[in-house]
Length: 182
Image 1 (tube, one colour):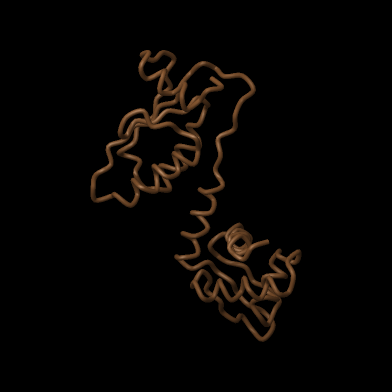
Image 2 (cartoon, one colour; image 1 turned 90 degrees about the vertical axis):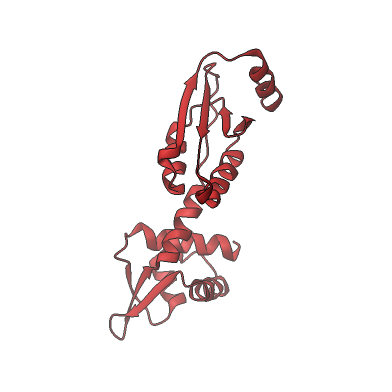
């Protein structure tokens, strides 16, 4: 397992226990990570993960007593965990197409250009096709995934979703180029 992936797994293990953190019977961070649920990683990988968590400031570590460490996600760690969870979002492809298109359109202010860039990058990753500026389409049900993405990006008031059963020929031709199987 690569270090970046292992760091995300470690954040997930610690984050699953809520913001209250994890108390581990351990005297070092690598040992605490092993006790917390990463026992399947090698000692070398645990050392690298512990070093990265410290270097990037993703954890707050405090000693409870001589034998116990308290591991909590820092604000930066919470953001990293959320980003990795968004990156894991996918849109399942049903066996039969319901002949409906899902449209996403947005008007995000220029002051949120970083959020807009993240949003469009994720739309592309999820398989959406842009037919006009700020107008994207997908052939499969995806509103739950879009809700999660829009909330993560913090752009809820600027985005609209719609389910469409009929399109004009020009738009349909553009979409057929992007989705030849439909």
